[in-house]
Length: 472
Ligand code: BYC
Image (cartoon, rainbow, N blue to C red; front, side):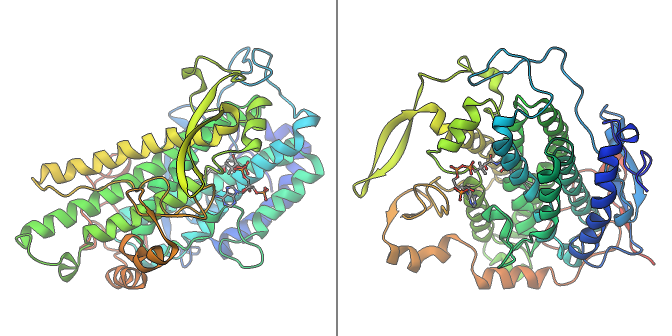
């Protein structure tokens, strides 16, 4: 059942009996999970024009074909090895990288891989109803492309667990299919992956902001001294880029359409009366998904993060851009709550590694928001979207027990309760969005009224190409 034809790979699967045996056991459970928890209503006859990775060179991972989703060929790929690669940071800097897991770091590495792996099926579960509300076939196809690749990212982590962590790894691989997003008894590990994604504004914000956390975490894991982890995550980053493209352009197309509707109505009408998505609602969803994704970077001060760095397991994004790779003397200044106020304090940089990565992340998000704001400029409008302050709506870290408005001003608990729906989506916003998404659009080339068409199609196909064949 397990063959290189079915499971494209560059890890020598056909000659690795141990991995074959492990996958023979796991793969049917995965397919069952995909059918139960993957895209609902699109498992039988729909044919989707997807990209399948068949090798790691640029032509190989851009192979397009129509497939039925459960027949997608989930593969296992490592980016090409780097000759004589050396450890790039931490206490062992300069030594050769590891091809096996050192016993003393086994638990920490397993925890990092399991945490990463857990997010991948979680996102598929979160998005499983969206196909029923899609704004076009183009968007439907992009949703499924994202979904199958998150499935492949799960495979990537399961490959590492099966290959390097023995029996524990096999157990963890099964647990990855047993936890469920939003399940009260067996939830996913990280909070943002238990939030519902029930409408397409959620989806585009998730792929913009949460997949971008994927990018920052994968960048930091791709620096790892464990070479198979580094090579796996390096290849995953190529796919992650498409997910962020889907999110960024999805929001951009909504903003574009909102500007058009505002213009047509002489800027006087409430955009909702015209079936569009008003800018305050878009801003609220930015506030929500940005703050949830900030939480995914962990605590500001973290001895775990210091230890991951010191041991060479998880570095900084683009570690080569830093001068000091040991970071034993350096300090990092951050804002800390103290005696009812905020004060700046310098802490050893190793313990601030989550915050260092969060800085990189915020900068990357900020650039994306600026690109959205260009749309208003083009329309000659003075409106602007913005990222909320980092302290706003935090559920993890030092600010999680305090309250701040999106500009960073402190609020009492009572004020926060009274005003939070000014800044975060409420029931009425969600109801409105579901109302304009109630009817899915399955006609090639047609788009829902609240979103502009994309500038171009996928793989040089026209915009009105039948990206998903919906006939039985
Ligand atoms: N929710 O000292 P800390 C992606 C817990 S996204 C709930 O900061 P830690 C993707 C933590 O478990 C990228 N709990 O160190 C995107 C710990 O609890 P215990 C995913 C949280 O844990 C879209 C305690 O707080 N990749 O790829 O090492 C679609 C102290 O934590 C949260 C990774 O996450 C939270 N948000 O730091 C699909 C990379 N945050 O055990 C995919 C691997 C913290 O003390 N993971 N806690 O009870 C890591 O690098 C780290 O585990 C974290 C957290 C940065 C996440």
